[in-house]
Length: 104
Image (tube, rainbow, N blue to C red; front, side):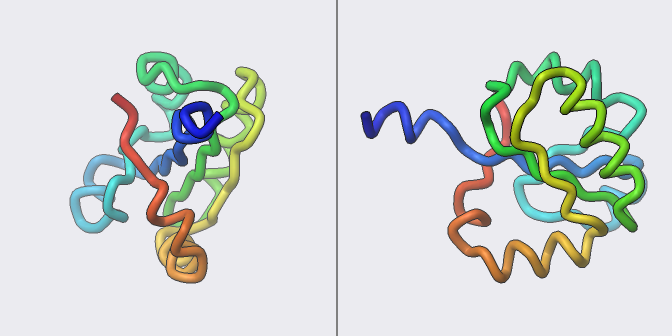
């Protein structure tokens, strides 16, 4: 039972541009610009039951990406809003922050 629970970890996706990501991003965030999310997420081979957190600059691109993932069958996708909103969320939720991992 413990092994099944450990198999699921949270994934944090930054859907901003590569230039924005290079300027600043959250540790362990995966860069998937919003226009590449559909193909990039398929290549990452995530379990559709994993919790996926998404952020961008203001939340608009993150919401677009969230809708894309939901339409692909992902069941637990959360829009954290902008970069600073995401940082605040992770500071307030240290267990979530500790569970973030990059996909293989």
